[in-house]
Length: 112
Image (cartoon, rainbow, N blue to C red; front, side, top):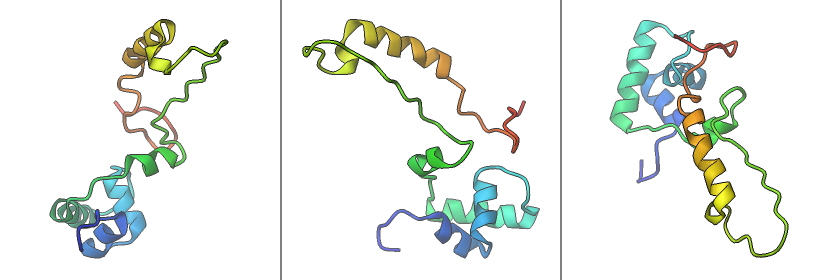
């Protein structure tokens, strides 16, 4: 590789598994054998693969973003975070969202 970030395809190729198996291991999902998991984890460590959070946010059931829609009147609002009301709302959201992105079981139930 020439300085490019390693992809999941690179991990799969290095571990001699399918892309789907590499994804299962990286996402800690069931469906991969112990030896395959070991090879994928070794390939991840060797290549320095880090999941692309932007891509992960687009995956079904894996959304890790929150949309905030703010309706304002008048022209002098500036940046949303600089407005006293909205900055308090955004600051109040953060504690409520902590831990929301934890791994889930295939049917959307939280793992203990």
